[in-house]
Amino acid sequence: TETILRVRDLSTRYFTGDGQINAVSDFDLEIDRGEVFGIVGESGSGKSVTARSVMDLIEPPGEITAGSVEYRNADFAEAVADDHPEAVDGEFVDLRRIPDEARRSLRGTSFSMIFQDPESSFNSTLTVGEQLAEAVEVQRRASARPRSTRARTDDYSLTNYLLSTVLPSQRYVSKESRERAIELLELVGIPDPVERAEEYPHEYSGGMLQRAMIAQALAGEPDILIADEPTTALDVTIQAQVLDLLDDLQEETGMTILLITHNLGVIARMCDRVGVMYAGEIVERGTLSDIFDDQVHPYTEGLLGSIPDLEGGAARSAADSQAAEPRDDAGGRLQPIPGNVPSLIDAEMEPRCQFADRCPKAMEECLEHPPEYDADGSESHTARCVLAATDYSEARALPEDYFGETE
Ligand code: SF4
Ligand code: MG
Image (cartoon, rainbow, N blue to C red):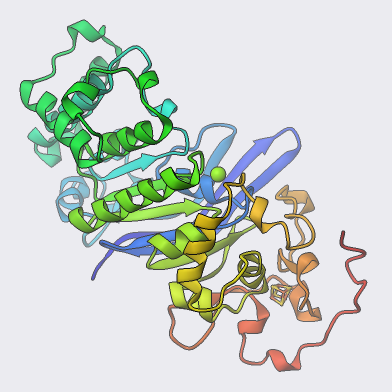
């Protein structure tokens, strides 16, 4: 396996009237080609902002203030090397060091994103088939051009612009693209795709529209699919079907998925590796079994503790508990961890472990911000917690009321 995405020290801030909000801090990530990497955390932990930062979809008052997002694509690296040598490292291109246009040319073909809310991905005045055909058409035109041209000229974005603004009747969509749209609907399991292609988004059920959004995201055969809470808005049965679909598509196409969710059941079912996010930081990362069976960080323990009945194979029963529980809104299932997510307002953030005032194991050493420690000598399981340090036995317990009463 080879690394396809390498994110280093990514930080995203929001500059608001209440002060600077540190939504994501020093985020690191490496994803292998064909891997499903999950990011799990409570609502407000920064996981959606992280996904949007990777996709360069942060809007004012938000801003990515530091870090790199390196994508491996040999052709693309070659195409941008002349004009932006500083952005290229072997086959990797740092997407934060190339012009917006070049970066945008990767959307759809290299990166695609699906969201919780499929309505936002569709225009209510066009049929689903028309919109899929158009997505296919845009990607066909893009890939008909040599990469080098795409990366350098505004021509491609002009095509995009025209396609997105001219009246529907004036859009040119080839017969091949229309046929491909129907194939895509079939691929995502929409029955009677020829007929359904003629329908408008409002004629689709929530689950069907979610499938259609996945079809749209796959129109350009992306290398990397970023899925932000893709099933949260669906009822449990439909959720399971959509997850199965994603799983099957991943296996068939070998695409890489970055999956964002608050639901550990979804992680257990889908992912190869996991990052647990808290207060804008990854606090623990590892394989499924590192996280479900050998977790080190008390926050991870707390998350797992909030899933009932974990015996008999953590991953398996985590998936079961997802199916057995009614859908909750973000964070609902995590409430058994007492206390609140800390403020991410810069001026109010303490330079200590961000979990300290909720942590049942907090010690004096935790009043300094812990680095990421290698949790088990494998270099692939890390935890941002002093318990993962080899010498923590020296640590001294804090008095029980150190942080005041927790609620
Ligand atoms: Fe708890 Fe300390 Fe670990 Fe933070 S560093 S999670 S306070 S034990
Ligand atoms: Mg979110």
